[in-house]
Image 1 (cartoon, rainbow, N blue to C red):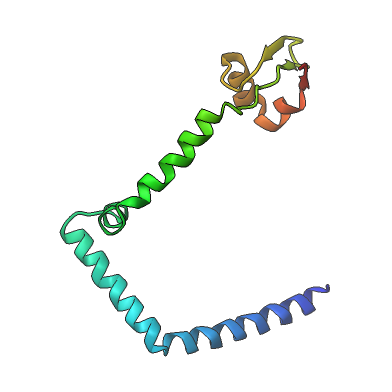
Image 2: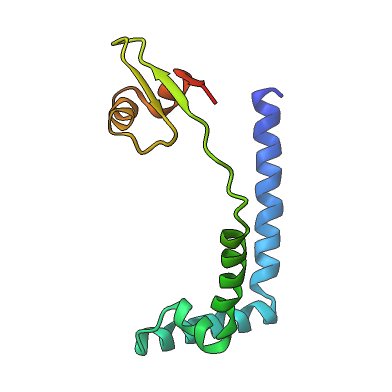
Length: 126
């Protein structure tokens, strides 16, 4: 697309969005929702409550609904074993074998040469 066509398309999109915004700003439902949100945030600030506090108050089962799923996954024992990766640093010739990313030297390499570059040095052993 030529630059002028892109400019005209962008200009047209802006006009359409401005028209949509104008229509939304005149909508009574939106005005009521914005008013409610403002009053709710003011009330939350007055009582120093967060959104999590409000959700816990209105739906006490919301937090416990997540717990069974986590317990079920842990109890299933279907956790996949990590494979050993061998990283060979082309700059120093040093070799590291690890199953996870929580390796001191590996972290140093990633900080120095970047995570993408270091992952490019990896070979999966098994």
